[in-house]
Image (cartoon, rainbow, N blue to C red; front, side, top):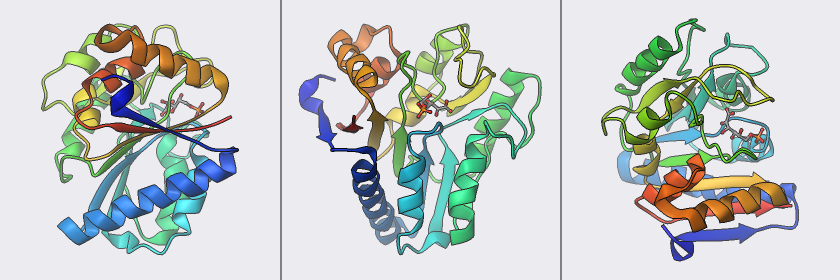
Length: 236
Ligand SMILES: O=C(O)[C@H](O)[C@@H](O)[C@H](O)[C@H](O)COP(=O)(O)O
């Protein structure tokens, strides 16, 4: 994928970005409900998207028709401050959405956690209607990280939707093993959106796009493989 197949959307600040991205996601959800009677979306973990979720949760949507999974999860107990699904549940469970943990139990065997997440995914309607991604300053996205599971995340069998990942090196802000959607599950989504803030992440994404399919950055691999143009939302 090159510059012509991603579209950048720039905002003055994070609040303006949150309102716009929440509007876009709301539209995607409503279109999916119209077309298929329900929506299945994967939302990013981390801190950047929290204002987006606050805005989105306030939208008038038939939430009981919406299934939300985290696009990746840290292997920690539910309720832990690092738990991505816990943040999603806080925003969307009160609205009536089905918020599905992909790591319901913090098992010490991260590969087994990945296999059980993959099995849980079979109960969902595929492909995803939307995958919203964040990006780390090291170029990771979802929980696709360099390390022993990198190749499996990028090149595993197409039907493998989730897997366990041991990041190497460990990310400082959440240094725990992860479960992530595979590149195949992410790139087949009907809509792919990225929301990031800050000059550093912007530079990483620009470099990743330039590097193309052999990018050293996970986000570069995802963008190179994406079946549809990705919308990249950015605020300083
Ligand atoms: O669970 C995770 O760690 C993520 O989903 C991850 O891919 C995140 O999006 C980036 O690390 C950015 O995180 P911040 O938004 O907190 O910078």
